[in-house]
Amino acid sequence: MIDDLPLAGLKVVVTRPRDQALKLAQRIEQAGGIPLLFPLLDITPVQDADALNEQIARLGQFNMAIFISPNAVHYGIAAIRASGELPQQLKIATVGQGSAKALRETGISNIIAPTERYDSEGLLALPELQEVSGWRVMIFRGDGGRELLGDTLRERGATVEYAPCYKRSKPQQDKSALLAAGPDAIIVTSSEALGYLCQMLNANDRDALRSTVLFVPHERIAGLARDRGWPRVHVTASGDDGMFSALITWAGQRERGNAGLDR
Image: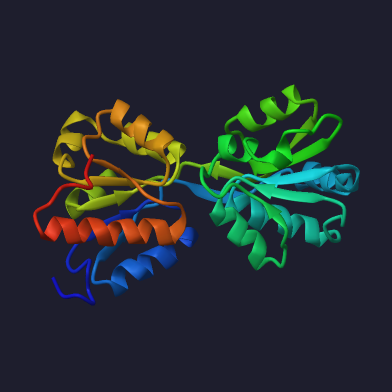
């Protein structure tokens, strides 16, 4: 393996929404890999912008806004700034470092975010979210999702309101393109995308991909993949950097005939 092309010849499927997959695909290509864009989710603005705008108009009455994902940052902040600015007293929180980075790129600092476990549980464990009785919290997210964050904050005495600011949908994909590629690795970054992938593949298809390593950014997604019979799953650190670093490490061990990362 050439040192400056650590992914030389390896075929890596990136299943993120197309716009979000381009930077990682470019890094894979620059490292000698062969990226295949195979989006398992489409992300679009919510159809009912009036409902979202009505919520944003009341944001000054809230103590905290939580942005659940980079998409929530992108669509939520755009909607907020279309009608003004974030209220100065509003505390800003998010569940992961990817979302925190997206917030910083919009000029927002002083962000409450976990530094170890990047999920709702990690955010809920922070000292800043323990004493929230009487608070009003608005959670910017997609259409649907886990309810743990809102339910727990309500149990702690907060009033919680969800603000759907984008919509997820399942794109039409031809699995034959995926199977024909014979990928060495597949990147899946959400439980929903994993569900779509598993629906798409029958038992024979999964057998054909048995030697393919699945890269996921969270143990919860890994558990779902293993439950559905995926034999080789690797959990990475968060964001493009974590995913890319894991690919490089795996490729090096693969080259040396060491499957220590596959578990």
